[in-house]
Length: 155
Image (cartoon, rainbow, N blue to C red; front, side):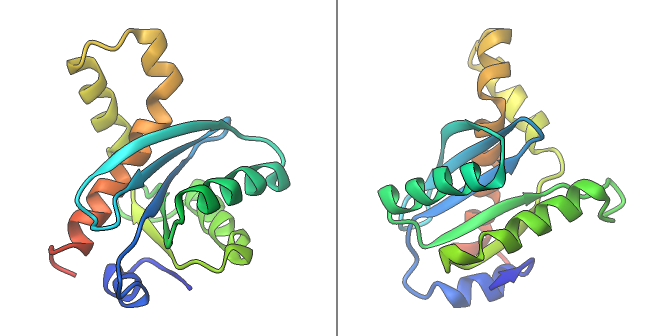
């Protein structure tokens, strides 16, 4: 199941469980994980992006290692809410994750990278460290917003 509706995603996961958040960049994939109770999200690894088969293998390993129950993928919408080529690419990536047999939530990621960068600056990350980790921190921002909605916000 792939959806942009938090309520539908929530219904697919009645027991909760660890979620994997993804921020899909052109060169890297930022990952983040949340606890099974959907309280907090933490940045994970930043994976180099390459052939989809390699990306899929790396994600499949993370899913198995963390016993992931669902995936939240950042959906890069335009500021007016419309989707462009990057949004289409995220939807295609979500469809290609079907062999994982996990529900997928496409989550509006507008401002996630800016928010992550501001947080990293406030924590005094160097410019080099920010560049190295921005995608995984953006994935955590995306995932945190989604779990806030899923765990008790308005669906």
